[in-house]
Image (cartoon, rainbow, N blue to C red):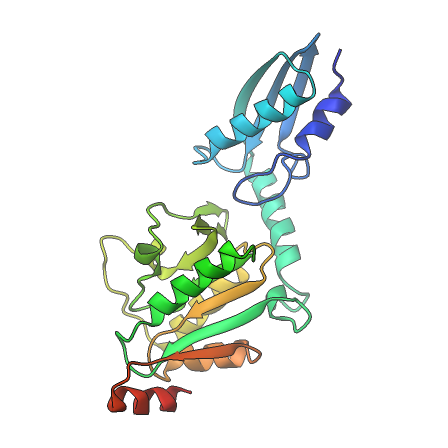
Length: 263
């Protein structure tokens, strides 16, 4: 006969597909009932209508059948507002320092930042970003893209992202596509509406994308910057002075001349 301890140990290897943490560690497993080799349990999701519920179900069933369960009856619930608030607090505690600075910005975080910029638009900046990111992911690296081109965002379309990111209170779980975590202003506008903000709002959103996104473990974060040397470029240089730059240009002499100015 199976025991609760065996069930919990088996489920330690099942991860929430978005948070990439064990469902046991996240306290998502409840109400385990075992009769001979038949297991009943409840998994409490972070939000109602979790888009990856089917995957969690399959992973739980496979994990329990590996330890000898003949049948698995799984029901889903959702966390209470208080439980979600506690989870958000835990995620933010790991993601920020005592001063509120994103932990990934510390020199010892191990994250390598690469800012992809240009002097002019339309030279292939976003194309370089997505291809470099997916190539790194295929090499086994943990990679994220921050689409910092607030006005001219194109990363969601280029990465073939159709769904919106999951929100747990005020923490955003980035969408994963082609093995890369993606965050963009494009997720927060409807019907391709333009974004019409002045400088201070741009700074606030770049900070939000860094501090209020659950990036998890990363080896690389690529930032697709808008062309030129405006507010976003200045803010990124101030917030992430350790970032290295890739400057994209076409061979035309005028484009190269403007690109050198961005450098």
